[in-house]
Image (cartoon, rainbow, N blue to C red):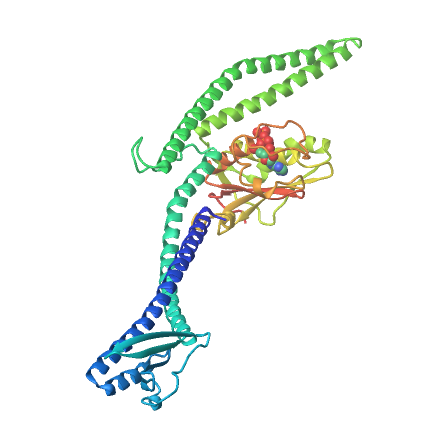
Length: 491
Ligand SMILES: Nc1ncnc2c1ncn2[C@@H]1O[C@H](COP(=O)(O)OP(=O)(O)OP(=O)(O)O)[C@@H](O)[C@H]1O
Ligand SMILES: [Mg+2]
């Protein structure tokens, strides 16, 4: 789950929690107020009836008392109200009972009722003023008022919740977007790109923790960049220094080899086995100096590529011939390893192209050498080249807009039935010094240093072409590169 969604959800949950607590407190306090108000209203009704009774008795206007008492019926919670002078009802909410003589006034002692009885004295005579409220009816009124308040609280809460959600989203966005930028930049640095820099909005020492983190990140990348440059310069100068003594060792080994061949011709039968053995030793020295040369050349190429000093010298190249030459170089090793190495002839022969033949050979050599390293005995390596008219073949693999629609391309493929490459690693094998863990994987011959594909990609990119891989772990890999065929199309 992304940080943005996580923060939004946490904040939304907080908003809901605060709303529920706040609404609960408001609802219960409002309910108590409503209940108290209802009780107060009952007391006021009883009080006002007593007052009206007193005034009517003093003025002798019993008619207004009767009509006032009758009107009290409008209160739905009022069950009954009357004024009793000891012999008869002076007034009653039930109009029929007004002025009716009774032995004793009605008593309302049901458990549900609330009776308020008052005694007033007018002209020395006592009168009973009684109001009776039905608790059930009062509760219905209270409940209706509570429901109205609940609906209002709910409406207000919904608005607050929506506003809270929007605020939560914006807060999450403002927290997550710099984190996202930092993680993207860190990924780039992880890939070896030390030119990334994150924009900071405040000067050194100012700003919040996030700004501080951005500044720290930038200075870390700057330091890494410095170290990378130092390392590249160091490697370049060391390898350069190594080259001269190694050339001397190689040329002296070459010289010795010549001497031994000549001596072999003149030597007697007793000396020949010893000379054979020495020649084998010399061959071993030469094989290893070649490996060292290859390594040094790879490091020097890498240094050139890093400093943008890598150049290609283009001449006319016939791809089928070039492929045949490179495949020929690996024929013996493939045979020794019992791996079938073959060139697949294309029904659409590739066009001639302008390219640096030696560099393209270097690319192809690395691809075939890799295939040989990771393919078990009995496996198969197939090299093919074909013309691709119209769209560039890697269009499918590239973002739209990078393809030239009206050029012809040569598509070269080195396919093996070897170890394959796990999907998550496909993106990184073209990086500098990137090698996959070899646990359980076959590596035939020298393990290498992980520069081959980096150099291959740089060479192909310098030609304006593209290189990519398709692979299924355990089944094999297909490395492709495409180059623009700008001279002619044989097809
Ligand atoms: N055909 C292949 N099958 C399986 N894995 C491969 C194949 N080609 C390359 N790889 C993986 O990609 C990594 C990088 O290849 P790359 O050619 O850059 O380096 P290398 O062959 O290990 O060393 P170098 O080429 O410098 O001698 C290899 O170490 C290997 O793990
Ligand atoms: Mg390699």
